[in-house]
Image 1: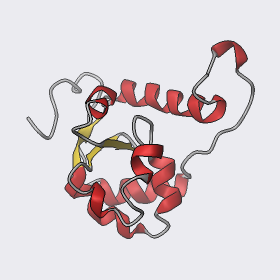
Image 2: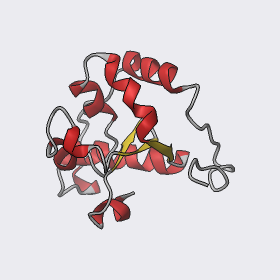
Image 3: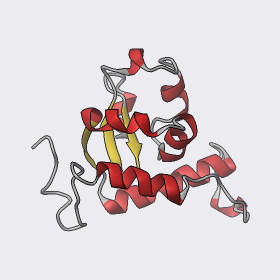
Length: 136
């Protein structure tokens, strides 16, 4: 995802493990075209999605942007990276780790999101990750 985003031709978001292609839509984003690229690319954007979309109406659009899922192990790594960066900044160093809590999406939000997306979202296990993708 990071490599594809860095080429500047695509804008791929990750929300709760879902990979969302918002490339063609970014100029229509009600919050403007700059907020997502500056805050939510190459990180787990779930908490941003919750913070900026108080109503659940934004869930309706997710299916049209959905292109697949991150492999579960990659999503776990991304969540840790996102947590480390938001806690310690870009100069994160394992030696400087402190017991600091970071902001995460609430369980209520995640339950709502997963309930809304369960009928069309691809479910994969680690062994199936290389075999299943919506675009194949």
